[in-house]
Amino acid sequence: MRPLVLLLSCAALQCAAEDIPSRPSPLKGGIEFQGEAIRAMQADAFGNPGMLWVDRGAALWKAPAGARKVSCASCHGADGSSMNGVAVRYPSYVASLGGVVDLEQRVNACVTGNQEARAFAWESQELLALTAFIASRSRGMPIVPDPSPDSDATYERGRSIYFQRQGQLNLACTNCHDASWGKRLLSEPISQGHPADWPAYRLEWQAMGSLERRLRACYLGVRAEMPAYGSPDLVALEVYLARRASGVVSNPPGVRR
Amino acid sequence: MILGKIQVPATVKAGEAFEVRVLVQHPMETGFRRDLDGHAIPMHIVDKLSCTFAGREVFRAELGSGMSANPYIAFFATASRSGEIVVEWSDDQGDKGSARATVNVA
Image (cartoon, rainbow over all chains, first blue to last red; front, top):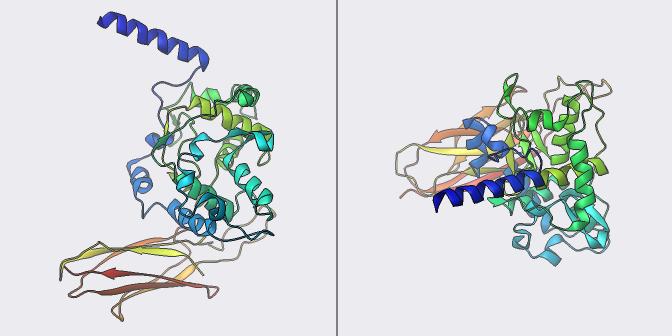
């Protein structure tokens, strides 16, 4: 019996590997590449600086805004429990918006469409607070990529970017995050590049930042031109990364070096 | 208002040291940085933080520009009876904030 089981599981692994080329194995979230102090800081519900944004987001959640004077809580409930497990499903195809959007764009679509308020600027404290609050309702949950076939085209676009060499250093995402994860880039360990735990507090930034900001930092690292916030390229990359990281446990707000 | 929070253990023993943890949300701009256009970014830091227990000052700190953003400060205190612990902070632009917690001596 045992050899058969082994054979079957090998076959299953091979299938999975064909579906998602060069997916690292075993899958490890970014926090596993961080030192002990950073891990402790992320796990500490009081000391995690990202929780300051979560608290602020919880207050914003209940604050009426816009021409219609409604708050997030007016529709989605006061305690935010309706957001449990929502953030780990983004980016997602949203039929009413006619496209694939990430969490930040989804929040802003609600702000402009339902509150009739002005959209929050990218990386504004308000947007980071709201997304951190919503993401915190997915603590400890695995990433569940959007299964909708409507996001397939975006996925393919993200995949081609992921394998495209670019920048003055002429590197593709895959060169570091598939071929060299676990090795060191100067003093920093190279992660597998999963989107778990975002938005996160990055010590280098001394601030909270979105996943898009982190992706842009990688573009800067290989000295490539950074795509604008909310650009289709960044969203496509997020979709690819989410499918690649399917099952990786997310604990937002994360803490990173 | 500058947001922040304080944490003390749920119960403490009389006369025994317990940890007080404070986290303040602030950019702590050093004054040494320049923006992308080369203009100096003015200093903006929380420079005073003090803590009282049952109305008596038990801890005070003067912070400088070397402190990280969103400063985290932890110190130890002892209490012989229950009371309210209040921590207050202010920045160099006169903005203030505070947080309070109850210390229960079991």
